[in-house]
Each structure stands twice: as C-alpha cells, then as structure tokens.
Amino acid sequence: MMTSTAFENKTVIVTGAGQGIGFEICKQLAARGATVLLNDIDEVLANGAVQAIKDAGGNCIACAGDSGDKDFIQSMVDLAVKTSGSLDVVIANAGITLFGDFFTYPQDSLYKVLHTNLGGTFFLAQAAANQMRTQAKGGSLLFTSSVTAHQAHKDLAAYGMTKAALEMLAKNLVLELSPFKINVNTIAPGATLTERTMDDPNYEAVWSRITPMGSPAKTIDIANAALFLVSDGAKHITGQSLVIDGGWSAISPSPNE
Image (cartoon, helix red, strand yellow):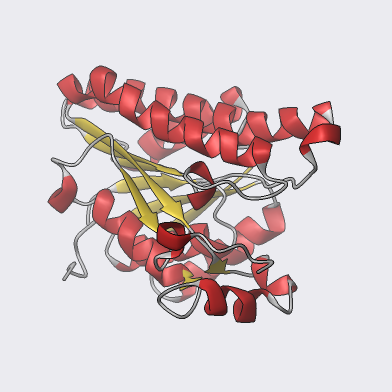
C-alpha cells in the first residue's frame, strides 16, 4: 500500500485537472505529501479544485491556461521550480474529445484535438524533461491515453488516433529520457464515471452491462494506477501503457449492442 508520505518533497504538474480523473489524481497526490500544480483551461474550475484540495489539507496551486500552448507550458514548469526548487513528476492528462463522422469531420475539430492531445502532451514532456535532466535526480512522466487507442470506437477516429500516438511517444521517449533516469508511461482509461460522462443518463447502466467487471471505473480507480506509475516503486517501468477498463477491451462489445 502506498504510504501517506509517498510523494513528500515532490512537486507535480497535472494538466486538465479541474474535475474528473485529473482532479482525483491531484487530490490523491496532495494527500500523500506532494506539492501539486493543478492546471485547467477553465479558471473557475481550476480555482475551485485547488480550494477543495487545500480545504482537505493539501498543498496545491492553480495554473489556469491552455495546456496546449508552448509558452504557457513553460510558465508552469518555471512556476514549479520557483515554488519548490525542482520538478519531479508531470502528468499530461489534458485532452479533448470531439465526436464526429469520419466522412464529414471538420478541419477545425481535428486541429483542436491535435493541439491539446498531442501538442500539449509533447511540449509539456519536452519542457519537463529539459528541467528534469538539469536536476540530475531523474523524474517521472505520465500521459493519459485511452482504450480508444487500442479498440475502434465509432465517431472517434481523430481522438483515438491521438491517443495511440501518445503511447508511441512514450515508447520513443524511452530512448531519449532513460539516460537521465526519467521514466515515461501511459495510462489508458476505459469508461469512467466523471462529471462529463454522467451528463448521459444511460452511461452508467450501459457500461455496467458491457464491462466484464460489472461497472465503469470510478476516478479513484484511474488515480490509483496513475500514482503507482509515477511513484518510486515504478521507477523500472518505462515505455509501457496500462489499460484500466474493467476488461472491456478484452471483449469489446459495442455500447449499442
């Protein structure tokens, strides 16, 4: 079991964390002693999430802004170093899902998905790794992929493509980052109960029916996996992707079945 001080004296950036999976990851990291820089493009969400973590006794700083913007990304890394002297863990969780039929998928939707899901993750990893290698003590990077990187899902060609690319990015960066003792992995969540998915009144019932374990994931299920992969206990794991989907991708029934 991970101790309550597992991330003490560590500084972490988590993007896309105003609610849902990202927020849960931040909450659990802060509860285990980390100083967390919590990013969301929505300033109200970011500030509310940070306040909730502070109210629970955690150390958390709001970083509202576009996680796909290279200059903003560098400002987050600089703030982490200014705050505590180093950057130890980065979790590139921000992503957008824009459903659409492949035959008519608009150019602006594709570029929005690429900007956040790929550009944001790539340049955050780049900025973080450049900082970590100067510190000479290693670090951990984690990208949020998806089961749609492994299994086709209707109207998610663009999204699934970006998530598969993140997993290849993690594999490729093993070559670049291992000499500096920086490990890099991805998590690939399946159906998960969040504020966004619960807007669909049928979501929980449908995914409970077609998920072998009998229910969609809770955010804590994803957070537990994320924390392990960025912990000291996982330092010899790198270039890997962990699917967290209750067994759905093993059998892959359609939500429409």
